[in-house]
Every structure is written in C-alpha cells, then in structure tokens.
Length: 308
Image 1 (cartoon, rainbow, N blue to C red):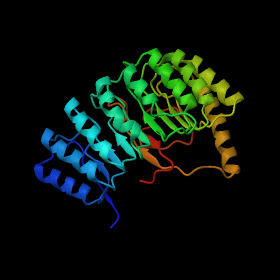
Image 2: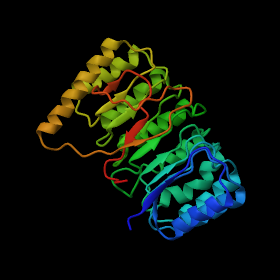
Image 3: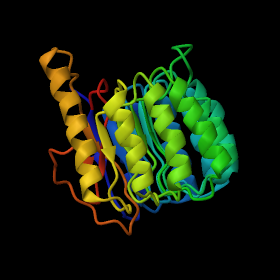
C-alpha cells in the first residue's frame, strides 16, 4: 500500500490519536503528517518525535502554529531529525523558536540528507538564526541544500542579517523559492535582494508582499529584468506602495521570459504546495496569470522536483 497522509488542524489530540499517528509512522504508512495548531502534551509530542525518527516514508512534516512551543520540544524535534533520513519538507511557521531554537535545530537541519524545503516564518528569529540558515544555502553545489525557504514575518532581523542572506542567495546553487513577505525590509534591503536575484542562477520565485517597498524598489527590479538575464519567474509585490503601472511592466517582462522558456522546451514541471501566511493577511487560493501578484494572499509556493 502506498503511504498516505494524516492531516489534523487545531484539535486537542487524545492519547489514542497519538498512538495511531505513531503506529502509522513506525509502519511507514505516512508520507505527509500535519498537526498544525494542535494541542498535545509534552509526553505525546515526544512520542510523535520518536515516530518521526523511526519513519522511512515521511516526506512532509507540518508542525505549524505553535506545536513546537518550548525549547524542550525543539530539542526533541532536533533529535528526531538527526535520526530521520526521509523528511524533505518541514513546516515550523508560527513557532516561538527564537535564535536559541535555531541553534538547537541547526545541526539536524544542516546535515539532513533529504531536507529541501523549510518554513521558518513568524518564528521570532534574529540575526544569529539567519547566519545559521545561510549555511543551509551552500554555494556551487558544494553540498545539498535548501531549494525553498520561507522567512516571512521575522521583524527582529536587522539590515546586517538580511545583507548576509542576500549574499548567500546570490551564491546558492540550489535555492529556487524565497519567501520574505511581511518583513519590514524597505527599499535599501530590496536593492540588496535585487543584486542577489541578478546573480542567482536558480532563484525563480521571490515573495516580497507587505515589505514596505516603494516605486524606488520596483524601478530597480524593472531595470534588472529588462536589462539582465535572470532565472526569476515570479515576483510578488502586493501590499506595497508601488504603482500598478510599474508592477505591470515587471509582470510583462517576466511573462515574456516564461514564454521564451516554453518555446525553447526548457520549462520545468512545478508542484504548488500551500504555506502559511500571517494571520492578518486575507488568504486566497485563486490563481493569477500575472507574474507580479497585485493582490495579497499568494499563500502558495512550489517545489518542482519533490513529488508529494
């Protein structure tokens, strides 16, 4: 029987439900486990972590919205990930990790043989955490690294932290999706990111929704896509102080690049998977043909080579 999925949201999990989850993990009958926003005791969280450690089938683990709520749970998760070899996608959005939590998880995350997608949005991270995350974006294929990274809504990161990330993105040989929405970046940091995008040979999606940008940033991105070759295919600029005209110009240029790729027969298959957006942002699953999204709530990203 092919592995299936267990998806539970916002419930208080009983001991019997935890046992069923753990049995399924140990029997390798689960490919996707999501308990986002669920309440469970520390003892039961430990049981789930032991199941994750033993599973060979689990590819996607969603612990969003406060499930990893203490440093003790963070340590248990780190131990589980050190033993696990199969998880490809890890969602921790809305977990109060702080920099100390990333320090605890770093050894497991940076050496995991299969992890390619990581959501650390709204995790109260700072510069130290970003420094560690940059180590998961190795240059020039030196080792395996992340293909999709979400750092939405981490306002404690400083300009220095974002500059460090921009350098890592510029040299990453694998990163394809970067979600930085709802961080107070401003035009100066956006300029750094534009340079990183221009340098990157792999980055295809950049989400800058609600990041305090103005027409100044948009003009820099317009100049970049108009005058330089880029892998970028999707740029999200919604909820910023940017004119519709500039957004449309960027959209048209990115659309032309997509059409040229299709004509050359090089377009890659893509899988769209949901991700968290900050709770104050209207969420929408509606699609748009434009490459610069002008309405809030993208709420989705892709991981092209991971079949879920």
